[in-house]
Each structure stands twice: as C-alpha cells, then as structure tokens.
Image (cartoon, rainbow, N blue to C red):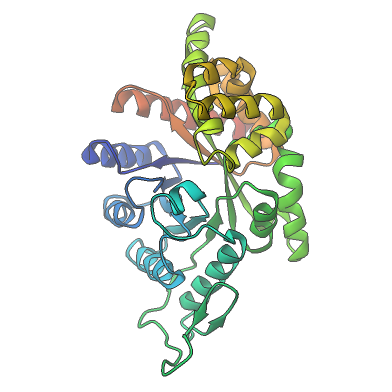
Length: 352
C-alpha cells in the first residue's frame, strides 16, 4: 500500500502546515492531498507545495464540482501538473447541497452528469485538442459567433483523475471513468456491498478491472499505550463521528449518513442525524458506539493498528490516507512516522 495524508490551508499556521508536508516527505510519504471543504481552496496551496517538495505526489482532495467551470478545472490541473513536473493528481468531488448551494449559491442538481461531463472536458483540454463538447450540462463553445478553441498549453504529463464518491451511482461512474477512488466512511468488513460492488460494476461496464483503479481510503490514526488511553481516545472521537452523521449535509441529504447506513448502522445513523439536527449534539454523540469508532478509524494500540492495516490491505485498499492525531507538529509527525512504518511492515509481511 502507498501512504498519503490530507491537509487544508484553513485555520492553522501555514508555515507549520508546510513543515508538516516537507517532513512527511522525508518520512517517505507518497502523496499529499489538499482539501477545500468550506474553507481554503486547493490549487493555490498545491502550487506552493510543488515548489517545496521534490518527490511526493500532490493531489487536490478535492476540487468541488459546481465551484468552477470544467475549463477552469482543466487549466488549474494542467498548470499544477506542469509546475510539479508530473506529480499532480486531480481529485474531484460533488460535495453536497449545503456547500454548493448554501455557500456558493449555484445549483447542486444532477451531480452525476456534471461529473461525467467535467472529466470528459478536462481530458479533452489536456490532450491539446480544440475543445468542442455538447452534453446535458455543458456546451462548449456556446452557439453563435464563437468557434472551438484549444488552450495555448497542453499537458506534458499524465493527469490521473480521482473521484471522491459515496452514492451507488457515483461509485459506478468512478469505476467506469476514473483512475482512482477517494473514499471515506470506510468499514472494510462492509465495503463489498456498500462500495466495491458498485465500483466493480462500473469497471466491468468499461471493460476494466480493479487493477485499473487506485483505491485510496482515509482514516484518523492514533496510538494508545494501554486500554485506558484507548477508551479515552474512542470517547473523544464520538462527537466528530456524530457530526459526520448528522451535520455533514442538510436535514434530508447526507451522503456520509447514507454510507454508514449501507454498512450496517441504519437505525443508529438515522437517530444520530435526528438528534443532531434538533440541536442535541451531546445526545447524538452518546448514540455513537465504540464499535463504530474503531471500525472506521485506525485508532488503537500498535498491534491493533497493524492488524487493521492488514484488514484494509486484504479488503482491496491500495493507498491509505492518514489523518495523524497529535496536539503539536512533532506529535503529528511522530504518529505519521509510526503509521508509515506499520504499512511497510504489513507490505513486507505480504511479500514474504
């Protein structure tokens, strides 16, 4: 398995974030993803990090559909690929109605066709051809006097496209057209029906196999010295998980909640959302079980985390995305270093 992490340029000391990324590269990390969420955007930090790193891959994790035209995404991707000398990965995601409509003020409707058409237009632009596209969502050029144009630059390196998707139809599309899948809310024991069956049907529809798709999954990683420390860690994560189940989206649309429901927690996920939406945040967190936290994270003793990484690998994960715990930069790097070493141990074990 390859190793990766995700950073965001919001709400923190940017110099410390840069130190984290450059030190992570020295530790042997393979990929750094830059998130957008509802704070900072991704391309600017990626351009800066391209100048500060030498080896690691850099990815948008993710650029949100609806916030830019397909050609704006294409130009950003080609530019970042050029200045990083081929180290850029284009991660795209639909986000959700709360961010797209509530923050950006543009419609969230038809994200499936918007995603398919955006990827097609980006790839056409990267090829150096004139851009001419007629779809349900986009028409380039518009009718009238305009004629098809090509960019004054073309991609000199391949630009792998990763899609961050959760719903069955979006997962099918990911298997059909993407180079990688940026997953979340991942429980390896329930991943076949919740995720992989849909991805595999998309792959089969395009005449592809699982080896054509990089499965990149993320989770918090934290190490507990003993059972008492582990109980404290698990208790501290319950409100964060309750926020994902209840606060990530609107009262009716929450893709994270849907994903947990498909993996065996339908009733508790629904009740957590109800309480969270009603303002009872503590009550929502109290419903989250220890099992839910441990199943969806890489939290535990070193032996526990090593065993979970084996399970992830055997489930089909190709790239693990770490969110290392720690109150300070040194603590986060220490956690990340231990996690990278465990991945190496698991890979060496598999190779023997």
